[in-house]
Length: 201
Image 1 (cartoon, rainbow, N blue to C red):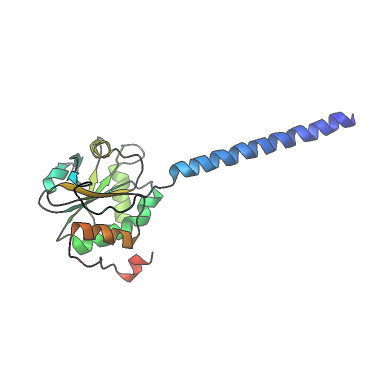
Image 2 (image 1 turned 45 degrees about the vertical axis):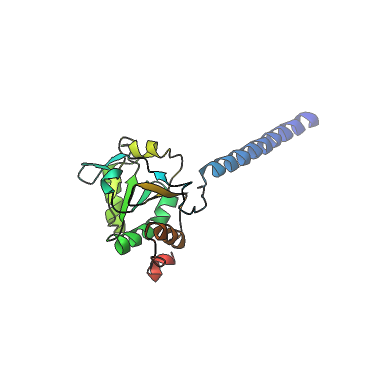
């Protein structure tokens, strides 16, 4: 009887320990897979400059817009979605960049709109709620994400006025990092001037 009673205690305890071990391992694997990756900031050069892949997205009126339509001005592209916490964390910096530099460069906030988890209505409500004024373009057909082989967001891409790809960054950026990318697009500019409340968030 004592041995049977002991077995009834030890077997569930061993099973619990096994499940905790497996659960911990699975959690670590999942966390590693979902943590944003960051890429070092490359300097523009003959090695990393090349024609930026073109793509087609839709503007707020559902009219088609191509990256090539912006030829003649540098373009700051950000791939994002409302359900992505790292994306949301950097949006205030892109809003500030748009307000500060829209007379010198174009900002393309490309939303990965799948029509289910991410819809135009969800995005519009999100923009209104947060007071964002930067232009959003909807990648409803996956043209942009396929062109850049996206496997993680947010991702930011710098394209110069001639349509050359200058740099790409995977993962959320700080205000300081974004200012460095803007400096690539606007040579000779001082670091971006962020207001104090934005840069401290």
